[in-house]
Length: 415
Ligand code: HAM
Image (cartoon, rainbow, N blue to C red; front, side):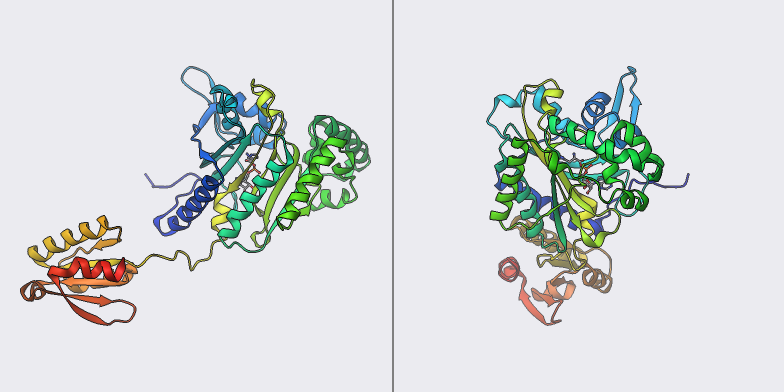
């Protein structure tokens, strides 16, 4: 058998993992400081959790879900996103009875049967946030602020925040009427997918990326003119708060999102240098979703970050490692001393790697490759004299250190 992974599913190797951990830790730090708690949702749900919330006529539900029947004949789907399962959990566990907004975040793999390409995978990771129970525009601004703050902390460059409002269900149906009137004349010019979308989900024509559709709908009426008074005010307030926070944004009336549950504010963060798959995070409000899932009428808003895409923006000079020590030894007394020291150092919070191999030369080579700041050499000679050799790998300077004092000396240098 040839060992081979599935197309669109990739391994994350130790050489890349530091960037992943860095993003995960920064996100946890930013979200926890904002009062969010982690929620762990299952990888699978009953299919209708997704089909009813994301919408039967969306690309995700129509073409991209990994759905199968389990041994009891129930329809099960590998989660293509996290919002629907979080809302399902919120309703199932009565989280609406607790303090609101319920502030939740999650991270983990999602599954979509999309055509794999750079930045698009069939198993990909999201870090997501959902805030439920409050309909005030202040919460929209706070959620966007948190996302922006995270990206700023990570020093990501060339990002653009784009926002839009899809209004409530009333203003949206007025707009869809207008949109269909406009698109009626253009139908022959649209791609086959958009011709279908015209009947089943006309909003989606707006985010078709094909040139022919972009070109023929370039003077399409924007949705913002169709918003009712209250949705208009909500959007004005969100923009006002973002302005107060000096978070730069651009209005993009084509952000209609590929999932049907959105209402009012929607947003995407675009990384200009990323090519076709350039949305690094996206989200918005979904004020009807909790009720659709059988809960009490409850507003909600959130976003999800595409982890692979953000990772690809992190500089290659990363990660900055904290300095650590590599202990090399020969012979039993040397090994015994170095393993004891290793344990003491690790207990003291200092990273210490133990060398293996039957020559000091080969251990030194490995130490050099490891990126350690210091190497401690404890060969037979050093044991006899009671003095280890401490080598600074940056300056190549060497010191003899009293092996009885080694722990204290190393803590001073590395602690
Ligand atoms: P989404 O726009 O479908 O929204 O996905 C969010 C982000 O996940 C995208 O902007 C992108 O960075 C990443 N992503 C999506 N598909 C793929 C893929 N096939 N390969 C790699 N990355 C991908 C949602 O999923 C909503 N649940 C977000 C949300 C949360 N809205 C409210 N709360």
